[in-house]
Image 1 (cartoon, rainbow over the protein chains, first blue to last red):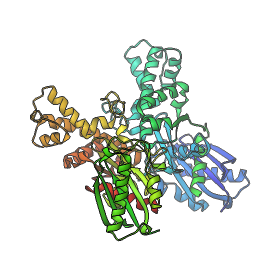
Image 2 (tube, each protein chain N blue to C red; image 1 turned 90 degrees about the horizontal axis):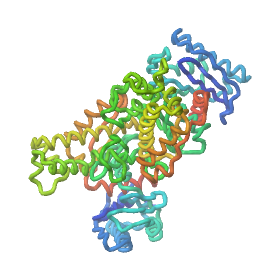
Image 3 (spheres, chains in turn purple, yellow; image 1 turned 90 degrees about the vertical axis):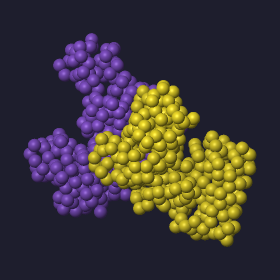
Image 4 (cartoon, one colour; image 1 turned 45 degrees about the vertical axis):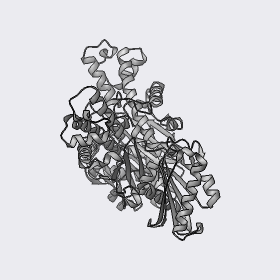
Length: 315
Length: 315
C-alpha cells in the first residue's frame, strides 16, 4: 500500500479527480465532463478513466495508492457505497464502490458533498487546526457537516446535519421536503430568489423588475445599489440564516462555523447580519468562543474534500 | 486503584451518593439534605461526609475506588471542575474538584445534570445498547445531552445541546435567556403553566379557573378531564416540543431520543403528539430509524448518572 491517495468529485456537469500525497499536495488532476445523459455505465467508465489518467500523469501505479475517496450528491448509503438517488447523475441505488474496488483493488470511500466539503475545510481550508467545527453550505439548498473531536460526525443513517430542514418558522413557506418553515425555505439562495420574484409579481417598486430572470444574485446586486425592496428581502433572509447559525451554536457549541456556498459569497453584509443575529439569539458563553468564517477552499473544494476524505479514512 | 466508583448527585435539596461496582451495581447509598443556606464550606463537608459514609457502609476504603463522579446544576466549567453559578447551591466560581481530590486523592469528574442524566440513560436506562442517542429533559427548562459513537459529546465550552435555547418561533414569547421563541419558552413545563395562567387571566371558560395556583400539572389533569382550553394549551405546547424533537432528528440522526423530566411523565398523549409532529416535519429516512422513548431511570436518575459518569470516565 502506497503513500498517495486519489480524490474524485462526482458532479452533475464534471468529474474532477486528483492524485495527492498524504499531506494533500496535489501531484496531478484531471477534469472530464460527466455527460450523465449517456447512462451509468458510460459515467462509470469515465470515472475509471480519470483514475487511470491521474495515475499516468503522476508516473504512479495503483500500488502507490492507499485509497480512493469519492464525493457525490446524495442521498447516499455511504456505509455500503451506494448512491441511492441523485437528480443530476444517472445513478439510482447504484453501488459505486463495488466496480471501482474490483477494478483497482484498493479501499474506496464515498460520502455526500456536504460531508466531503466539511472534511475538506477541516483539513485544508478555514477549519485547519480545529477539533470541533460545523460547515454550512448555503446555495440552492442548505446543508452541513460537523467535525466532532477531529472526526466527521455521520449519525445513525449517515444523514446528520440536515440543518437546512430544521423548522425555524412553523407556519413558514413550504419547503421541497414537504415541511413548512425549514431553514432552507427561508434562507437559501433559492428562497431569496423566490422572495424576489414574489416582490416583482406583486408590483412593488423595485429595480428587480428590470431583469428578465431574477435570482439571489440580482438581489445582492440591487441591495448593494440601494434598492429598498432588495435590501429588505436580503435582511429578512439573512436574519433567518442567522437564526440557523445561532441554533447550530446552541446545539453544537463549536469552535468554528465555516459558511460556504453561493450565498456566502455575498460578502461582509452576509457575515455582519449573521453575527448580529447570533449576538441576539445564541447563548453568550458559546457565541463568544465561536468564530464564524467564510469557506477557505475555492472551486477545488469538491476534489480537495474527496482527497481529504481519503486521507482521513486511511488513517 | 480499585474496582468501585462513587457517584454523587448534588442537588438544591439533597446530596445523594452511591458506591457501585464498575457494572453499576449499587453496594450502598446515602442521602442527606443539602441545607444550601449554611454556605459552601458546610455543604462541602456534607459531601465529604456522604463519601465517607458510603465507603463505611460498603466495608470499602478509598483504595477500592477508581474515581468519583459528580452531577451538579450548571453552568459549570466541567473541564476544570468549577461550578460557575447555581441558583440552588451556595457555589459561585467554586472549584469542587480541588478540595475533594486533595482529601481523597482519586480522580474526580464533574458534569452538569443534563449530561449526567444522558450518561445514566445511556449506560443503565432507556439508552442501553445504543451508540448514538440524544437525551432531552423537559421540565422547568429544556436541556439535553448527546452520546456520539458511545461517548458524551460536550462541545468546545462544555455547553453543547442547549437545545432548549434554539429558536423555533422567531417572534415568540421572551425566554429567560433574553431571546424570543426559544423551544424552552414554548414547550417547557414552565411555558405550559404560563399559558394556563394567561388563559385564566383572560377570562376563558376553563376548569383551570378553579385552582388557586396553576402549573403544567393541572393542565395535564384538566386536559384528561376534557377541558377544551387545557387541551388546546397542551396541544400547542406539545406541537412545539415535537418540532424540537424533529429538529434534533434532522440534526443528529440518532438511533434513539430519550425524553425525561416532568413533562415526559404526562404519558402517552405527550409521545403521541411528538410522533405526529416528527412524522410531518423530520426527514423520513432519519425519522423512521429513530425511536422516541421515555426515560428509563426513575428517582435515582441523578445518582445513577453520576455513577455512570465515573464509570465512563474511568475507562
